[in-house]
Amino acid sequence: MGFPTFIVRNVLGRPVRTILTVLGVGVGIAAVVMLTGISSGFERSMAAIYEARGIDLIVVRAGVSDQLSSNLDEKLGDTIRQIPGVNAVAPSLMDAVSFEEANLASVLSNGWEPEGLLMKGLRIVDGRTLEKSDEKSVLLGRVLALNLNKKVGDQVSVAGEPFKVVGVYESDSLFENGGLVLPLRELQRMMGRQGMVTGLVVSAKPGVDPKALGKEIEAKVGGVAAVPARDYVKGNLQLRLARAMAGATTAVAIILGSIGLLNTMAMAVFERTREIGLLRALGWKRRRIITLLLGEAAMIGGFGVLAGWALALLGMRLLMLSPTSRGFIDPKLPATAYAVGLVMGGLLGLLGGLYPAIRASRLEPTEALRHE
Image (tube, rainbow, N blue to C red; front, side, top):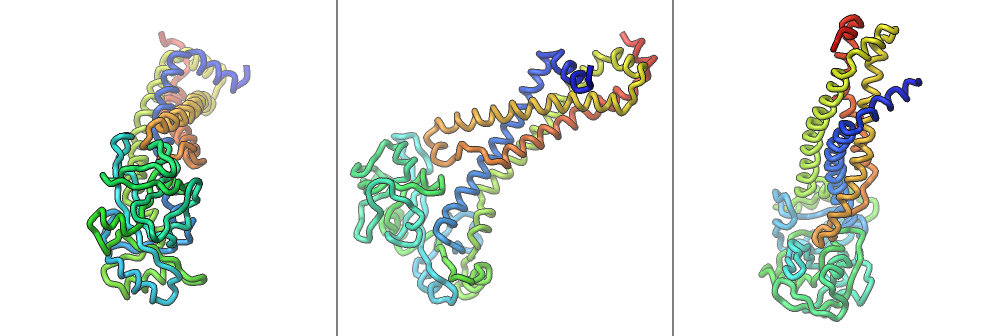
């Protein structure tokens, strides 16, 4: 009997215990893979908002952690336009609205200038884009239009006010696909923030260093922070919370998974003490015993990784059944999420199998053969 066959026989020889351990490990890995995938998807989606439009800098009120809580005078855009190296500036007003009839909460609503820089990242799939003469008009993201069952020409109530759907758009960003766009003046009026915006986006001229331009903007315009788009995305509060949650879940899953696997391997060693003693008496070295048991733990960990990947895919599909999640979560898991699950499976196999393997290797053949 070959060494690998010996490992497979020992693992599959106790099917109930192996299945329960694999499921325990798999659930932990699935939770980590899903959270890693969701946080990675959020980051990609936010980055797509700026990359598709060639936006280099985000200007917000200094000291705020989220653009929704920022408040700037719209006229600052005129000051920033005069700074050498600035190619274009566009104001942005953001808010969150709900559609209780569709069980949707915190839908992203953007107030943008029609025909402005921010409109460039939208692909109109039905109807038309916003025009400067539009007032009670709205664009719906493709996902939001499906969730609300609305099409071009329909009326939709936004914060209690009726708006006509003039177009349905698609974007590279899931956030925008699940949101809506209003003329800037309309959203300012509805929020009672005439002349105010939550941020300004800046496009730099070719060859201009965005970081250097950001410092110049901060020097000439007091009370603002001009952050490179990529740095702004990485420092986003919601993304930091998502990454922290994924990290905490990983730590808990590693602890619980390694304990469960350690218990399984310890029981296997206890039940096979005589067998291990016989192998030692036949000339097996300590290192070979350790390799055998670590191989069994690795095999269980590998099955746990496969189970975790499958459960994560199933979990993402179930999340997509919720209209709210459908607008903000990408069901496709990135390669990094699968890699995290694979590394976690290997780590669990090592942590769960190392101590029982070392303990088994130290058994003396005569002592082990007398074990009842």
